[in-house]
Amino acid sequence: MSVVLSSLETVRVAAVDLNGQWRGKRLPAAAAAKLEAGGFRMPLSALNVDIFGADIEDSPLVFETGDQDGVGHPTGRGPLPMPWLATPSALVPVTMQRDGGAAYGGDPRYALEAVLARFAERGFSVTLGIEVEFMLVDAREVEAPRPPLLPGTARRPVGPAILSIQEIDAFDAFFTDLYRAAGEMGVGIGAAISEAGLGQFELTLAHGPALRAADDAALTRLLVHGLARRHGLAATFMAKPYAEQSGNGLHLHFSVTDETGANVFDDGGPAGSDVLRHAIAGCLAAMPASTLVFAPHANSYARFTEGAHAPTCAAWGYENRTVALRVPGGAPAARRIEHRVAGADTNPYLVAATVLGAALAGIEDGAEPPPPLDGNAYAAEGLPELAPSWKAAIDAFAGAKVLEAILPARLRENLVLTKRQELRKCASLSPEAIVAALLEAV
Image 1 (spheres, rainbow, N blue to C red):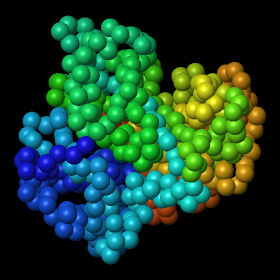
Image 2: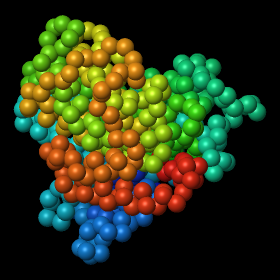
Image 3: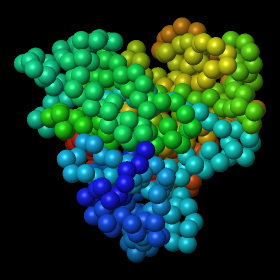
C-alpha cells in the first residue's frame, strides 16, 4: 500500500544494512520527487556499518575508494505510511546500485533477489512465511531489560504466559494499533500470541512471494519499535534479553512451486518428494558455516541452549520442534520446510537468501540428507554442530566454500569485516553491557 506524497510533510528514504537496520535520510515531502528522476544518492558504506552505527575502519568502501555514493532505487513497496509518527510521513524503501545501474553486491536485499532469480531460471518460485518473536520491555530502563508494567496496573509479567489470552489482552491497545498500522502499510500479520518469555510475543506474518515476505519482516521490526515507543514502551528483537528466559527466534517456512503451480515438495504422501529431501540436504550442508547469518551478534549465542527450543545441531525431522529443520505435518499439497535456527535479531534478507540458496544448491546437486531424527535432538550424538561462539562463527563464515555460490563476494567480505570490528568492540564489555548496548539496536 502506498500514500500520496502531497498529503505528507516528510519522507524517509532508506535501505536495510547488513545488520537489518534501516539507513537513509529524512527529506521534505517535496524533495522526494527526485526519486522518480533518477534515484537517491547515499554512500554505499552506509549499508556496511557496525551495530553501533560506526564505519568499518578497514572497509574498502570508505577511504580506499573515497567513500563513493551509490544510487538508491525504490523497491516498489512505497511510499509507505509511518503510523507511529505524529507528523504525516512516509517511508520509501530502496535498494542500492552503483553509478551506471549495476547491482550493488553488498545490499542484502539484492542477495535475496539474486537467489530467487536462480530459482526462476529453473521455472521455480518460492513461497515464504516468517514467524518472529520480540519482547516488550520497560522504556525507562536503559542499562538492563525489565518487563513493562501491565497497562493500568502496578504489576509486571513474572513468568511464562504461553498462549495466554490475558497476557496479550493486557496490551490490547498496542496490538490493536499494530494490526491497524500493518494494514495501512500493506504488511500482513496473522496470529499474535503470548510466548514463554517475560513480555514475549510472536507474530505470524502472511506467507507469500519470498521477496515480499522478507520485506514484510524488515518493515515489521521498524513498525513494532515505533509503535512501542508511541505507547510508552520499548521493544526488542534481541536473541536473549534475559539469561534465564526464552530467547527470540525467527522461523522461516518455505515451499517451492513449479511453472504449473504444483508444490515440488509434494509427492502425495507424508514423506514428501525427492526434491524436498534434496533441499533439506542442502540446508544441512550449509548450516554450520552459516551460523553467523543466523546468530550475528555477541548476545545471539546465549540463545543456543539445550532444551530451550533453539537448535544447536544440524538435524532434521518430521513434526519435531527440537531439530533445526522441521517438516510440518498436514495436507501433502502444503508440504514445506521450517528452518528454525535464526534469532529474531537477524537480517531477514540475509537469512532468507542463505537458507533458500542452500536449499537450491541441494536441489541442483541431488544431495541426500541423513535419516530424519525422531525424539529429542538435544540428546542425540554425532550431529554436526552449529558454530559454538561468535568468533568461531565469523571464522567459519569467512572460509566457507559452500557459501561462495549462495551470497555475493562483496557481501560476504563486508559481513566479516563488520563482525570482526564488533567483536573487537565487545571484547572489553561485560555480558550485561553488551545486552544494554543491543537492547535498542535490535
